[in-house]
Amino acid sequence: MKFKVAQEDIANGLQLVQKAAATRPTIPILSGILVETTAEGLTLTATDQEIGVRVTLPAMVAADGAFVFPSRIGEIVRKIPFGEIAFEVEEANNTATISWERSRFVIHGFPAGEFPPLRQPPLTPGFTLVKSDLRRLIRQTGFAVAHDDSRPVFTGVLLAVTEEQLRMVATDGFRLAVAQGALSSPDGELTADVIIPGRALGEVSRILGEETDGVVRVSLGDNHAFFEAARERVVCRLIEGQFPPYKQVVPQQFVTKLTCATQGFLYACERASLIAHEVGQALKLQIGGTTMVISASKPELGNVREEVPIESQGDSLEIAFNPRYLIDGLRNINGEKMSYEFTGPLSPSCMRPENPEEGIFTYVVLPMRLT
Image 1 (cartoon, rainbow, N blue to C red):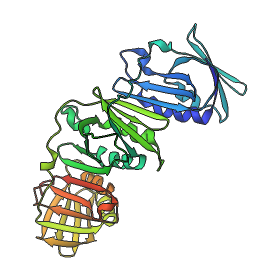
Image 2 (image 1 turned 120 degrees about the horizontal axis):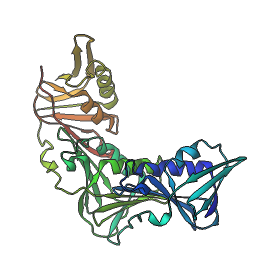
Image 3 (image 1 turned 45 degrees about the horizontal axis):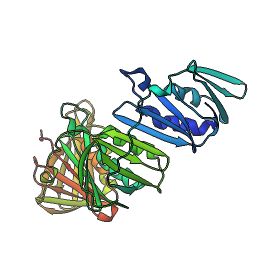
């Protein structure tokens, strides 16, 4: 196996795949990155058998082959100056020589034949989304997953496909995030409800990069989900279990409703959270007429009082929230204005963008008891 590749290309490719490599593997080879020559150049693959990532990049191939590099190859390549890097693998002794300018680095690896093959997408119907839409859906739900493995379904995001729409839902038991988008090109009639690990969707969003164009094909099958773009593929194992009936959690009526500028509300909460930054500390909202007062206090630090102009309907209300939960929701509302509906001082509240064209997003959060 022998090839040359631009330092920037392989450094970027390794950065994308290496997070999928196992950190504490029961099989040592899973800590490595498989490099294979292809008609397009190179493919880089890493997997911990829960998540698998494959990236294709251009290269000048002189001799075909495959080799599993240790994951530290990424650190080595990042420290090489920009320019062309030459790789030559001696499969007989499982070593690779990396050369650039007047320097050379010899590294030991694993034979490619021992690396477990990455699962292939099924032939069942799938669907296609624009990259920017998929990233929005992941961003607006992934933050709300639980990080406690005691209830595995709460660590994942429900992906619900109906006709030409995709809905993603996440909850940790204290808040619920629902985002919806349109499918660009369904392969046929497809309905599905699957739970995808939040960590896997985070990798999908990271690997897709910041491109606003391009599409991603999603297919489901054999207890796995597959996300494929032009040069990237992510495969992940689905979470088994029944997602909670989230539609019952979204309030249908309110006693108090406000509309206000999203950024003004967000910035006021971020400033007030500097006082209420510890676990158990709350932000208090007093809502009535044309003003919402946001306050927090802590004896050893001080107190804060912010006034935010609003338009309100219904009863005056005093309610308290975990500041992080409020801020997380506000950061994910696209659009200049938002609406916030309340069902009582101890009941679920629901915020949305005022203009649905900014992206369909619903965020339900439970309040804290006022003290």
